[in-house]
Structures are given as structure tokens and as C-alpha cells.
Length: 294
Picture 1 (cartoon, rainbow, N blue to C red):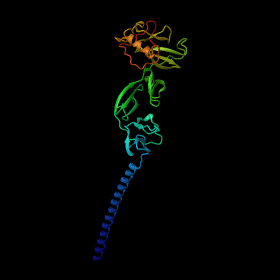
Picture 2: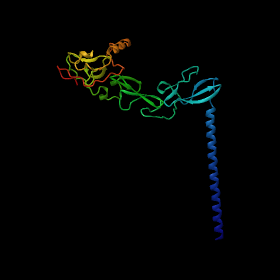
Picture 3: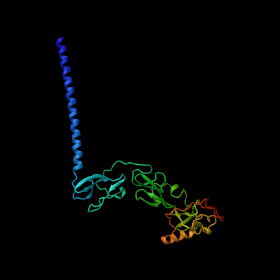
Picture 4: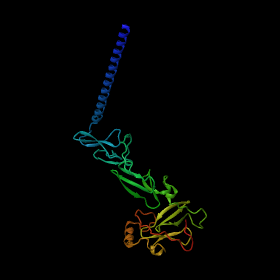
């Protein structure tokens, strides 16, 4: 029995020593790893050597980081969230952070994690609205400013400009023309290659149907759309000449508006205008001679 007891004590002693040895080795490896990481980080920080005493140079892997050199000392800088460093200056004298979509990052593929606010996936940038395709948001430091495309246009996420709504894939038909459907082919006699149709709710707006696709237009400021004598025709006229739309502009000084339009070269344009028009307080009246085009 005494031999068994001594053997068991020896085994326990060995196990304790092994346990302490494993723990010591694990701690040593952890410390070694931390030292290596610290050395690696320090090496990364110091690994950039300024080519000149003063300048701004792109980071080799991060598109939103860059090096600022002052008296030959390099400092790592980071653009605002949603901006990237523009490295197109051949002399490296410009410190320019621009919107991500304006910068060719090339092999600089890394970015800081996105930081967002309402309507802004990143703090800086231009972003499409999630629900309305004619609306987009300009974000600066997380503050979102709302913009609306002109009548008939929608914001294209790829081109990042306002385009005809029917050419923007994200737009549904009810958004493209408010649910307006063009007359079926052959329904309008002698309509030609396209036809014009009054907007049911706004005196200034109208639709042009081309290849059975509706596009929303707006008359120049100071005029409204007048339905023509023939089916699918019409033109932009003075409000006083369009029954039911005489008070569309209310108390606005139309003479000053028209003068400004002429100075800008927009006086005769029937394309959608960038300026917002006052909304009619009542729907456009239907012509007495025929039912309103739907």
C-alpha cells in the first residue's frame, strides 16, 4: 500500500509541474505575440519615408488614408468617412479628399468601416433615397440635404445624375409617371411619333408618350400646359389663356420670372426645369369638349 501511495503522489507532482509548464509556455507565447504585433504596428507606422520634405502621398493599400510630410516627418492622415484621397497631383502638393465615386482607388482597396446617419450610409457622399427614385441626398459630415430631380427625371445610382425616370432601373412605373399609362398604339388618330397629355393634378406638368413610354415634362416657369384641339396635342401657354389654371402661380411676379428665364436661356424650353414650381391648389380641370386623358 505504501508503494501505491508514493506512486500516486509522484504522478500528482508530475501533473502539477506539467500544468505550470504549459501555463508558463502559453503566457510566454502570448507576450511574444503582443511584442510582435506592437513591433509590426510600429514598423507599419515608420515604414513610409517621405520622398520630399513637404507633400501629401497616398497610402499603399488604403484609399481613404494618406501621408502628410512636413519637414521630412511623415504623419498618417485619414479622410472623412465616405471620402477618399485623390492622388492625381503629380507634384503631391495638394491635400484633397474627394467623394469616393470621384476617386480612382486602383489597388488601394481598403476603406475605414462605414459610419452612417439617417439617409447617409457614410458621413460624406451623394446617396439615392431608399423609397423615392426622384430624390437623392447630399451628405456632409453626416448632415443630409434633400434634393429632388426635375419633373420626369430620377436619380441614377450608377451615373449619379438625374436621368429620364424610365431609364433608371430602380424606378417602378407608378414612380416614373405617377402611374400614367400611354394610350394604346392606334388609339390616337394621326398622333405622329409622340403625343402630349395633360398631367391630372398639376397645370404646369404634362406627359409625352414616345414608343408607348410616358415621360413627365414641365412647362417653363410662368406658363402652364394647354390641351390642344387634337387628341394627344398641347402646348405651354400663359395661365390666363388656360381655363381653370389662371391662378396657378398665385401672387408671383410672372414678369420678373419670365425675364430671369430669358436671361438664363430657358424661355422657350419645354424640358423639365430645375426650379420648383408652386403647386396648384386644385386638380387641373377636364376640358369641356372631351373627358380628361388618363
